[in-house]
Structures are given as structure tokens and as C-alpha cells.
Length: 357
Ligand SMILES: Cc1cc2nc3c(=O)[nH]c(=O)nc-3n(C[C@H](O)[C@H](O)[C@H](O)COP(=O)(O)O)c2cc1C
Image (cartoon, rainbow, N blue to C red; front, side):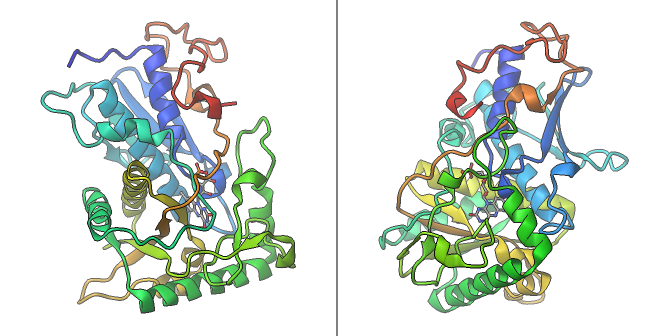
């Protein structure tokens, strides 16, 4: 492989790949900066886009940024660098969640991450009914392996535990609708695509389960759910749970990377996914999502519904230019380095650029 060149177009592509990641309520709570001295990309949290009521500890924010970090690693591998990251590298800068060096060149055969590059532009949440076809055991093992490579456990409970998980999700949905602060916060992020390029467009909201079994999130937190469109969902949903041994910020970032890795491998195999995060937003319900195995406690980080069904519609994304701090850009070929000066080329040639406003 030839030595990768970090020019403005490559930088924009790296950041656009990261931004294509899922985030809670499509808040996209991240910013990027190139540190020209170390040739390192920094990912920082944007706290003002955190969900104060739904996610007061910012756990879901960290999981979201972990997803973006995984996409960034995939893109870094695609361009020929070694896809490594340092998590929470400077404790005195709590908003700096990770750094990714763009200095070491990959040698040897392609890494498994590179094969996920084309897929990351195609992944969308699908909140529609899936068919009854079960997931092959080998595929479930592959997804568990994908999570394990990020240091995270993915389990696929049997029918009894699945029922229990779904019941916890339904209880969380009921509570959220009754909680004025959370309901209002959720509603604020449902919006027709606008210049903010944030939030969930009505077309992506999907359907509710007419059997009232799978707790598909009602982002509008309607008091009268009859206004929502319902369809019968699959009778035997494939539900998986991501969990970690500890519950620190670093574990949340790892969980996010594992989540995105699982979602991309699933997408590559033609499997759709939607997330059922509601029970994680209530501490007592979250605790009940995982059973204590032996003496090692486990902490649930995500509930994922998987299956075969329709592709979900895309949700908007901010452009690379909107999320990249420009102070480190002047050293790059193809960039004037001036904020807002169009130093970065337009995104028309980028994969997935139709998603960018
Ligand atoms: C931490 C986290 C929590 C999420 N929770 C839910 C959820 O409870 N229900 C849901 O349908 N989608 C959930 N999502 C998916 C986001 O709504 C989705 O990623 C975002 O709207 C962007 O859409 P996309 O996934 O189609 O790109 C969650 C995503 C993350 C990262």
C-alpha cells in the first residue's frame, strides 16, 4: 500500500465517516480538531447537545461518540493508517474523549476494519417490522466476536429473558411519556430536516408494534398513541444486549465502538437493526437488564433489535466543515486553513454525500 497523504479532502472524508455514526436522538454531540503538531485527530464532546433529562450522566453521549470513533477508525484504516485510538487521553480536558494519530502507516494485509468502510455509509436505523426469519447462529456468533474485539460482551437471550427485556422497555416507555421533562426533551429532537441537520425526521420514526410487545420508541412521547401508525411486528424478535464489566466513561466509549462494529457487521450481512435504549435511561430498569454472572457484575450499555426487513431512511448529518475546528488546517495541502473559507473542498465527491445538507 502507498503511503497515505493527509490532505484537506482526506481529512474531510475521515470526519464525514465519523459523523455518519448513530447518536442518541441524532444529537451528533461531537466536534473534531486536527492537532498539527502530533498529526492527531481529536474528538470532543459537545455538552450543550447532551440530553439533560434523558441522559443526565452523559452515558449515552459517550456511547454516541464511541460510535463515531469506531467509524473514524474504519476510515483511518481505509486510507492506510493504523486504526488506533487513545481514550480520555488528558484528564485535565474532560471534553476530549479520544485522539486518533494519523502517523503510523499500515503494513501487511488489510485489517478487518477496512472491509467495513463501504458499509458505514449504508447503515441506517430501521424502525419497521422485520420478517420472522431467525438470524443464523453463525451470524450471532460473528456479531458477538465483533463486540468482543472491542472488549464488550454481546449476549443473545432466550425467549424468556427476551420477554423480560421487552417488558422493561415497555415500562420505560410508559414512564418517559409520564415525565414532562423527558417527554418535552424527546419531542424537541423530532423535526423535519432543516439547516441544523440534527434530530430525527418524521420519515425515520418508523412504526409502533400493533401487538404492543416490542417497545419501539415513541420519540414524540404522545399521550394518545392512537395517532401513531401501528403494524404487527415480528413475533419472535432477535434481541441482543451489549454489556461491560465496569461502568466508567471509558467503558461507555468502548461500548459505543462495539455497538457500531456490531451494527456495521450486521449491515454487511444484510441484517437491519434498531436500538431499544429506553430501559437504560432509568437506573432501576437498567440494572435489571443484565443478570449478575458469577461474582462479576455486568452493566448493560445497549439493547439491539436485529432482523431482516426494510432499509431505514437516512437521517440528516452535519457536514464535515460544520464539525471541524479549523485552527490546525493551514498546514494541509488543498486547504487555505481559514474557517469558513471553503478551505475544505465541497463534499459532492464523497461517499454518502447525498446525506450531507
Ligand atoms: C446511545 C444511543 C441511543 C439510541 N436510542 C435509540 C432508541 O431508544 N430508539 C431508537 O429507535 N433509536 C435509538 N438510537 C438511534 C438514533 O436515533 C439514530 O442513530 C439517529 O437518529 C441517527 O439515525 P441513523 O441511525 O439512521 O443514522 C440511539 C442511538 C444511540 C447512539
